[in-house]
Amino acid sequence: MSAEIFNKVNQVLEDIKTEAPKSLDELEQFRIKYLGSKNIIKPLMGEIRNIANEQKREFGQLINKVKQTAEQKFQELKASAESASENAAAQSLDWSAPAEPMPLGSRHPISIMMNRIIEIFGRIGFTVAEEREIEDDWHNFTAMNTPADHPARDMQDTFYVRGVENMLLRTHTSSVQARTMTTQKPPIRIIAPGRVYRNETISARSHCQFHQVEGLYIDEGVSFADMKQTLLYFAREMYGPQTEIRLRPSYFPFTEPSAEMDVYWGLKDETDYRITKGTGWLEILGCGMVDPQVLENCGIDPDKYSGFAFGMGIERQAMLKYRINDIRYLFENDVRLMQQFSSAI
Ligand code: PHE
Image (cartoon, rainbow, N blue to C red; front, top):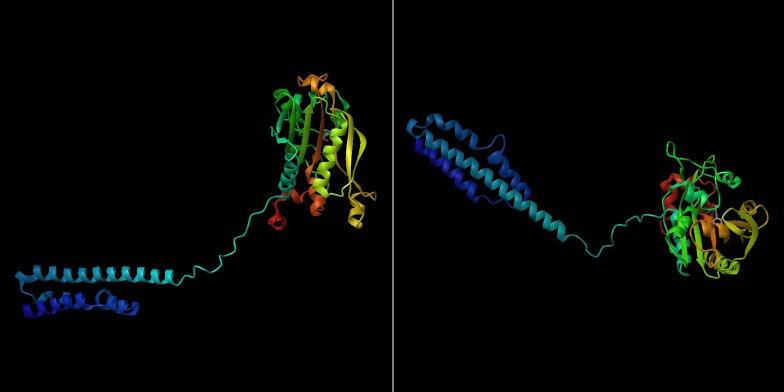
């Protein structure tokens, strides 16, 4: 009796070893047959009661061996089936197929404008100077010929840092002029891009933060004509070779004489008419010869050196160029707006 049962179990063991499932279906059949909830090994286990006592131990070990062999074989077959199907998938890849389109990021219109301006001035020898946005009163105002009681301070409503004396958010990038002049010797030729802050009510046309690019050129014998030529070059590079400019007398505490520069924008349509208030001319920057007092404040000899400076707002130009009619869009970073610049550099 015992021998017969032993034979049966040994036969199952042999069967397991010779089984060779050729498909995933057959592998599943193998699993059900030997490892499933109604597998054929289970009833064999029950036979233990018909085994002579002294052979029960040996029988138990044999049954265990059968179970382990089935389990091991199944795992091996499964692993090789999986790697085979991965290979097949890899072979079915078409390496010559065009790649999935990858959406390009986009630059912010302000960055596009700034980079363009930096590049234009870079070509005539201006290098970029960057400085802090939290400034002291001296660099932002006093050095720039705007002492505490100067009425021109009212031109720029200032955010002061609460609890820290004489510290403020810079109201213009002219503070970079002061920092450069006090630390470098002429010739100085810098362009200062950056963010500035003014305590203004936020509306479609103005914001409490915006960007400026400022330029400063100091050397021996720099004249107003040099400034005019430099700015004409800039305007034509920026707005096209036919661009005309005009300089109107103006006032800034740190330049003398001072001017504002308009470019001729033309009156092609109703929007141009509105933007330029019906004249076709549009103001884009302030400029002037650096006031000798400013040079002196910053430790540069005004008898030896002269220079010019200019400063322009970026938002305004970006709004014009891209026809964005509300400055607030430029600070909200809504992807629907930003995506429209994905091909621009
Ligand atoms: N700092 C001036 C402003 O913010 C612009 C300016 C810069 C004017 C340099 C003249 C020279 O309005």
